[in-house]
Amino acid sequence: MMNHSLKSRCKVAPGTVITGKWHSNKYTVLKELGYGANGIVYLAKFKNSQVALKMSDNGMSITSEVNVLRSFAKVQGSTLGPSLLDVDDWKSNRGQISFYTMEYIQGPDLLTFIQNKGKSWTTVLFLQLLNDLNKLHENGWVFGDLKPENLIVTGPTPKIRCIDVGGTTIQGRAIKEFTEFYDRGYWGLGTRKADPAYDLFAVAMIMINTAYPKRFNKTTGGISQLREAIRRQKDLHPFEKVIIKALQGHYTNALQMRTELMSLAVSRQNPGPVNKSTAANPNSTTRPQKLNQTGSQPKTRQNYRKKKKKSRWAETFIITMSIALLYFLYIFQKLL
Image (tube, rainbow, N blue to C red; front, side):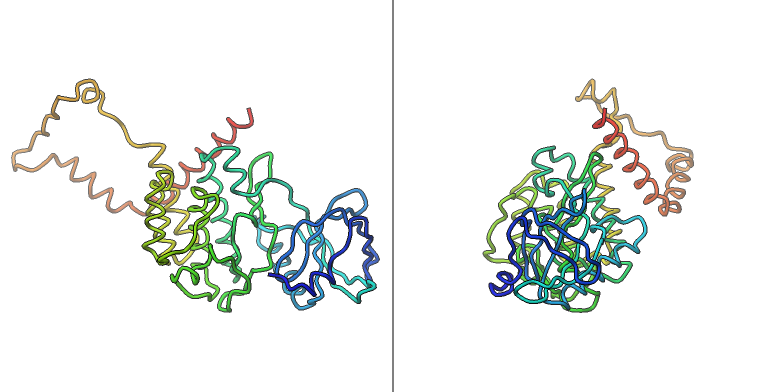
């Protein structure tokens, strides 16, 4: 939580004009959007557009967050964080205060979006999130303070974006900021060392959070309490395997978790062909397959099994293409 002296120094009223010392850009404060451990974020007007402006008298914190946003910009294909627009200092009557401006991302937070649009969106949004996290991890960063409040869903085609990079940490270092409910150290299931598994634990907790919008208190802690929470909510049952593995740190990268989540999604939407004769007559029995002269099943079945065993490498590709097709069909139907 932000200390009171820092908040009072950075507290400004709507209508305040902040002029950059070095670049001379003028920003008119419209309202406060929120505050954290290292500063206050405001909605501001710059010329004819709206921007998010974060100020802090901790210059090192501002520099760190600016470096994170610049790193995000270098990750091709990732739109996880906002675009960095300007970095400057403001000479106020309380002294010099550092600030930066970034793209203002509009939309509901993740939980609000799912509650309004339906839980059918859960898998699609988490697949997006895991894809962006993987790119972030490949570039040496861990998000750290990952929680629904920091995840905004923009449109018209729903896309997860982040609005706060204050907790983003270089891999191998101690996590800078965290929220207890999403922190594996709080639940006694790992350290606060920045590694990909730390973020994946948080993703699993956010998935649990979709079924418990108001969260719940820690009692016994550990995997036993979280496993019981999952079992009490039928919406979480289809994803229990993936959630538990992430909570226990069994995934070393986000793509592993994403692949298994896709597999579960495909199996839910395509449960497999139904034997029409059996469905029509549930009391009927399936005739056993004929055996060949050696007493074994036909060679074609044996060949099929061998071929299937040798081609398991193609399974991930098939799953990926299937879920991509399902996703785009779903989006297309929503836009009609």
